[in-house]
Amino acid sequence: MPDLSRLNWEDLRIAAALARTGTFAGAAAELGFDATTVARRIARLEAALPYPLFHAADGLRRPTARGAQVLSHVEAMTEHAAAIGAISATESGVTGHVRVAATASICDRVLAPHAAGLLEDHPGLTLSLLASDANVSFSRYEADMAIRLARPQRGGFVIRKLDTLPLVLFEPVRTNGGDTTIVCAYPDSLQDTPEMAELARIGLREKARFISNSARAIRTVTESGRAVAVLPVFGGDIRTPPAVRATPLGTSREAWLLIQPHLKKDAAARTVADWIVDCFEPSKTGA
Image (cartoon, rainbow, N blue to C red; front, side, top):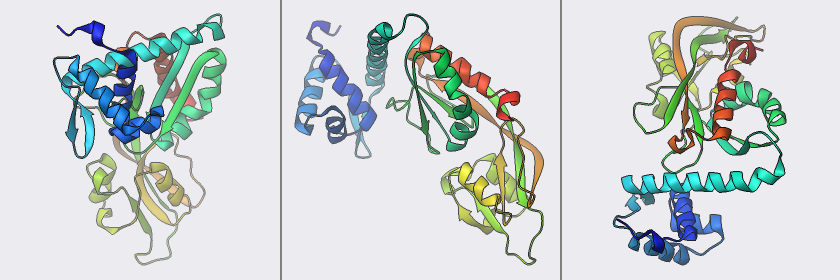
């Protein structure tokens, strides 16, 4: 058994910063220390435990399996400390800070329109919407929950299915003739998505000339009336400008909510998770 009396909360806080940033320099910048101090404090913390917390991989410091377990408890302690500090700010209701990562399209079209209502209902709650078209790292605690457009195949997080999103072909109503229509597609890192499979099926995948990992950017290009793309839509909302035709393809992909396991019983996290599920109701996403 580790000698818990030798553990220092400040060292644990530094370890959490290292997990988030992946480097001694990154953790030092986040906390206002120097990299040498971070390295020394991590070494002291690991000396108090019978196992290493981090290992080097691809030039980064990543948590070991046991380290991830320890750091999940550190994050939970941090959340609880923040909740305690917020108690005086409000007399009733949930308190805390919840970070939600999602694609820019989901942040803009699904969540942001209803965020004011959530925060008005819960004055002690702080919400961060982290818009990114790349998956955040749960093992590095970059977010408390995330929305992903595929069911995760592994991981220790809590998951909830949010919706089944139909795939729609967006294309110009009229063309100028020839092969001049701009084909939009995802980059190679997203070639296994259902959208790219549909583009291949209709013979357009190899003709892509506008490449982006942002569905929002691609949707904007199609709204010019000069481009074609396959994209998921939320709540059946396939409204388009007059120059664009939207055709449902009969295929779909799923939206899933991932929640850090240590937040399973956290009141603020449960409140935000229930709000996200509510945001995905067709009556709201189609509004």
